[in-house]
Image (cartoon, rainbow, N blue to C red; front, side, top):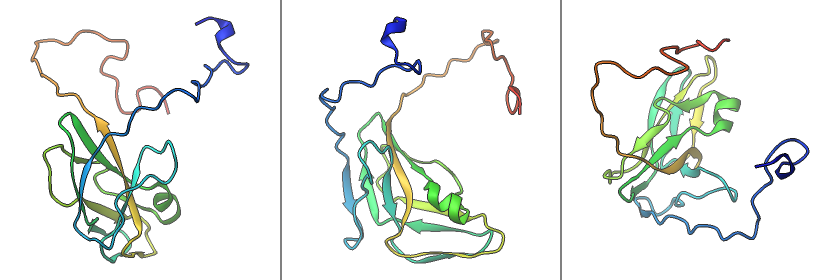
Length: 167
């Protein structure tokens, strides 16, 4: 890429909008609660599809609850789904997920459940049936073959972790 291939800010130009989009990956879903919507993307280009609460739940300050979503899925081999917190719940109410992201493996066929926690020290949080409580992100995953060695090859980072690059 040459300097003329970049815009004034130094960024690469956006890909042409007339390029054909890849067809969406078909995910089989079973609605365990027909009164709830299937997971859906709020906007074009969103990575996460909203999951809804299948029941009411109260989260007192500092407490957690496992909230069912009323859906089960069958992912194709080579894929996993990851349950992520909704940023609005975290920023406005201090509500997030205990094991974020939660992993849904391709072989799992049970109901997707969300372990929510209220990190607010003072205010309880009430989840209502039908509320959007988390996002489901589907990704291709690689299967690794782990090979034990006596010593790992050197890298620029080395063993530096937790804060090793500064504040």
